[in-house]
Each structure stands twice: as structure tokens, then as C-alpha cells.
Image (cartoon, rainbow, N blue to C red; front, side, top):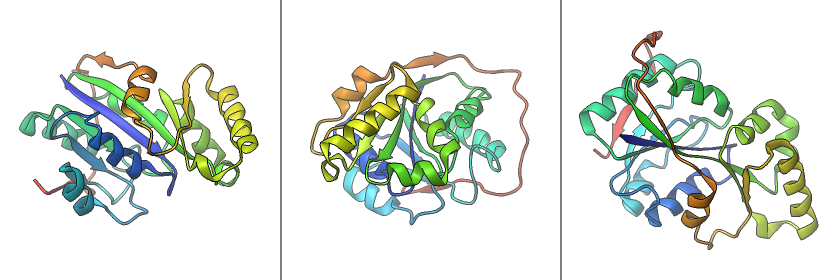
Length: 219
């Protein structure tokens, strides 16, 4: 059964940094695939391939949670059937709703294990991001197994404590990780996240859209 992990977060929060770090810590196992849907940034496929050897798939012409959902499901199932990866990492658009992406997974016609769902939050821009896109901001955190606070060494202890209190009030007993980047994150996420297996949805119906097919990188 293929494992699927999602690393969400706003632009500049540190999603790619966390993915690279977890890849180097072998959190995702051998030869994982990364689906990159963050169309607001420059793709980092060559950098990631050279540094950690991950196989890249680019789907940057729309959001996989809404406008590209039909093609995303077809391409994801094709990837699983044709290449049989052990682990697929998905980096969704910065302004996507994680709850909607999780609903998309329910339409998969292939069994899968939702291994890790983590949201990266920029401690420096916490107030700003909450102000400009509050609905998306909190949806990403409420829908994750764990929240990783990035750039924690650049804010005061008082500010960090305040941010943690605000997040905890919203997400309940989900884990908040606020450690420097040089900390080993794989053991922390292994404790915070509980993989859940799902059967194939054989009755799912989907809308096929004509644009936005994923492109394999470095295969």
C-alpha cells in the first residue's frame, strides 16, 4: 500500500526546507516521489534531485484541490500503478485548503495510507499571514496531524509562547513542533503523526479537466 504525506504551508514558510530535511533523515524511505503544486514559486526540482535524489512531478498550472482535481486524481493513480512508489510527498499550493485536499484523497480508486500531514507556519509572519488569509491559514493547521513552527530562533520567547497558545486553542491536542532546523525532525513527526489506511473508493466519480497535467521531472 502506497504511503502519502502532505506538507502544507504558506509561501516562504519553509515547506521545501522541511521536505529536504526529512528526505535527508530518510523519513520518507527510499526513492519517494514529490508532487509539487506550489505554482506561486520557482520550482526547485533540480535542486532537490541533486541534493536528495527525490523524483519530481510538477503540477503548477492550477490548484489540485479545486481546478485540477480531476486530472490530479488520474495522474496520481497512474503514478501509483505504473511506478509503484513506496511513498508520495505532496506539496500543495500555499493558498490551498488542506481539508479540501484530504477530501480529494477520498475519491482515490486505489488503497493508500495517509502517513503524515504537517503544516509549516512562519513564526515571523504569523500575524501577517493570519490577517491576509485567515480562513486558509487556520484550515491548514486544523487539518494537519502536526504543526511545525519555522524560524523560531528569530522571534522572542514571549512571542513564540503567544503563537503556540493561539495555535493550541485552535487545533486542540494536535502536536506543535517549535524546534530549530538543526533538530532531528523525523523522530518528532513519528511521535506526532498516526498513519491511517484507507480502502479504494470504487464508486468515486470525477470530473475530467482538459488542462494541467503533471509533468515528470528527473525520472
